[in-house]
Image 1: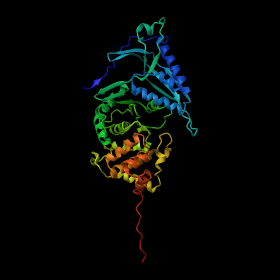
Image 2: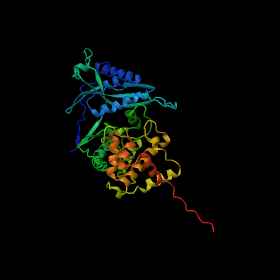
Image 3: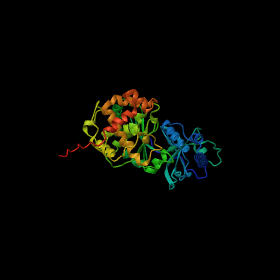
Image 4: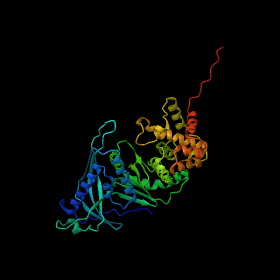
Length: 407
């Protein structure tokens, strides 16, 4: 049975802007701002709600990015009077429209970015049981509870092991995800030789690109439609009106990442092209270029013609960089960004074709357990990675034109 979590807000009161609740939120914002501007990850993480491990992991990664570079500006502002929210399923919390205003830091090349404004309804919780009408609205009340930031106040749809969190106007898109994800999970888990069917997969839908980017890192400015990191939700750009299959390819790709991360604790340390390559490979059955012959993970299969043609052309154009150029998300040259996915996909397809699905998955698991790509290739594929690369590149060389004898 589909369960819609209780969403009806019980507004116990509408506090005056000078109430203790408003003052407590503004005090929290000040601490968050100071921590972010100082790059103080420990203090920032002490200010967020610790109840949801997915939310916590997302903010651990968010805060970790501050060590790579601070935003040029960062402010949190209260844009509506906060209200107390209660439901039968959850403890009371406070909710308000807020704005996160920030400017990403300049790039290494010195490029400056425009200021950004992210507006959304946020949640605030307290470790103290002080969310009462008297404590939060009476200006004479000695309200001293420290509030915690709990992120977006999502609407939620849940069915089985799928939980979708979304802005209210994207209920249609949320329902599409709830219906589409279970068979996608089954397909990808079969491809990856794993069973994660009991894991509750969280998916978060974002209404606009900048909000999605801000939820990842304050430094993130590249375009994207989906995101997943170990322990995080699958994050997607919301789409209404696209039909029941409209999000399949994106969902399958991002769930491919989730399945890869469960292979081992060091999975996210694998070369970036392997992560994107396997996610693209296992999601092929849910993309427009899919052919029926690819529905099952047969031991050997032909590399799809369109993928083979693209790589052949790139080989002739000298557009196949060394794999070492495609290993790190943070350092990949922007001109090779497409190669991370397409070149990586082709190598994964090549390994699958020549060594089989089981060997490919064992190769990935060996890296996920901490081995280098060369160690994994020697252990599982019985050659070093340089030899594998040489053999792969040989398949992409243009055919030699036979010499014509001169009479």
